[in-house]
Amino acid sequence: MKKQILKIVKIGGKLIENEASLSAFLHDFSQLEGPKILVHGGGKMATELSDRLGFKTNMIDGRRITDANAMDVITMVYAGLINKKIVAKLQGIKSNAVGLCGADGKSIISKRRVNKEIDFGFVGDVEEINTKFISSLLGNDIIPVFSAISCSNEGELFNTNADSVAAEIAIAFSETYQTELFFCFEKNGVLKDPLDDNSVIELLDTRTYQNLLNKNIISEGMLPKLHNCFYALEHAVSEVYLGGPNLLQKGTQHTKIIK
Image (cartoon, rainbow, N blue to C red):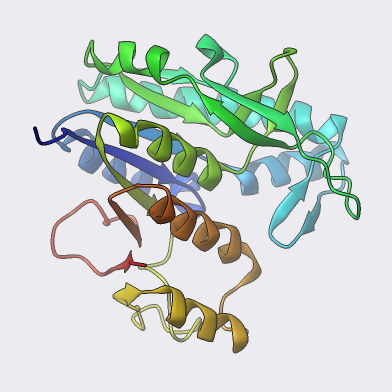
């Protein structure tokens, strides 16, 4: 029996910050048929608020070092401001959604990242997705909207890479669904020339990816995203796409990731 398709869509970057672009994207998202899950980041907005509060933001290889102050800001921005704005916009276009972080329904369980060389602080790596709880929402035609915050079994909140959250959700549901993973951000896909938004690589396989790495073409912030793309494909996710705000529309430029 053919599995039902479940679409997991992650949005981030300037797409979240621009009200018009976000509204247009959410309209496209609402038109997707069948069950779907939305995951969002919001790092730039968290950085801006941290700066206003006088907290320094530290990044290593595109990943945020999260101290106690940063974790407080991230919780306010991700699980509060951004998450509720998205949910409200979806309700406004008749798409019933519920805003969540990993602590809600014990939906995304993680452990604190341990690294001998770098102390990432309150950063978590996903260990378990509560598919039973999330499925109960999907079964009632409710769209889960996840912020990039997970929770330990001991009840501690962790900043968790939003691309990783989306990938882990797609992997966890691949046993019961045919999962398709979409990463939507401000670029049209993976670019041959970072200065030319139209130089989109339509198909990106492992070999091409390695060549781009060797030539230092891929930006630091793109590395975790592409790592999660290939990781998802290696763990039974059916299809993975990267593209811009119009990715969910047919016929638009994008990158499809293949093994």
